[in-house]
Image 1: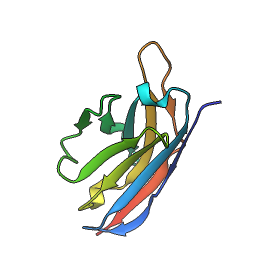
Image 2: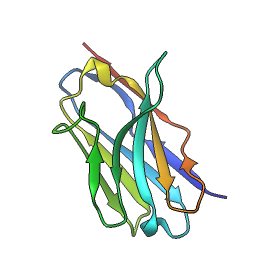
Image 3: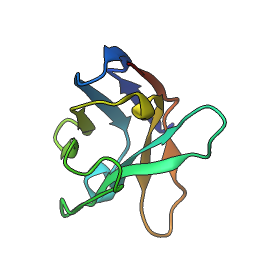
Image 4: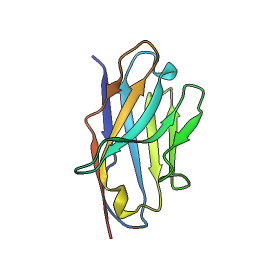
Length: 116
């Protein structure tokens, strides 16, 4: 059974930093594109960042220059370093694993709250 387990969320003041982790019990982890998404109350889930199996990265415009996604294939873990956090970053953050010809996998989410 595939599991994606996020950790590292919490409450932080504006301007602060958090590092999210997503540990994946996923065979063939290294071939998956891994991503972070977020969903704020009353809003749709949105892409935050993705990293391919070749380590190419993509970011939402709203987080460029502040967030960094990375992966450790040996540990089957993907990270999201979040700096200069803003109140509008408040959301539940979800980890995603995706590859062609396969279903996506999602974690249960971790809450990030940024106070002003």
